[in-house]
Length: 115
Image (cartoon, rainbow, N blue to C red):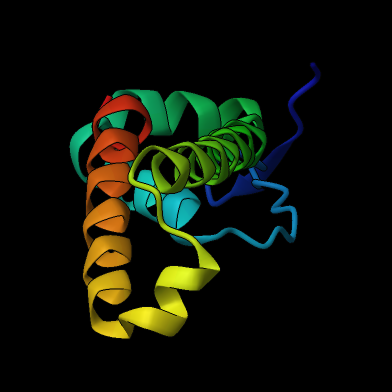
């Protein structure tokens, strides 16, 4: 990698720019990015300067969303939450789904975000 320099006064300063790639991140990708900025500054800076930050965060985002979808199906089956339950007792279904969502988010935060 060749670095170009620009003369400013008596000094030569490197022309360093970060090529930002437009990506759409979901909740988990944005959370990982914010966590890295605040608590993993060295990793964030290294990935940013090498140009691999957005690919890394996008990978984490896709993996977290895939895990969410898989765990949602598994937990719904495990707790026997069906469309019939939605028709019979809507509030119970909402409570169960909120509980499942909280459990899955806790798993994802531990595995992908705060790691």
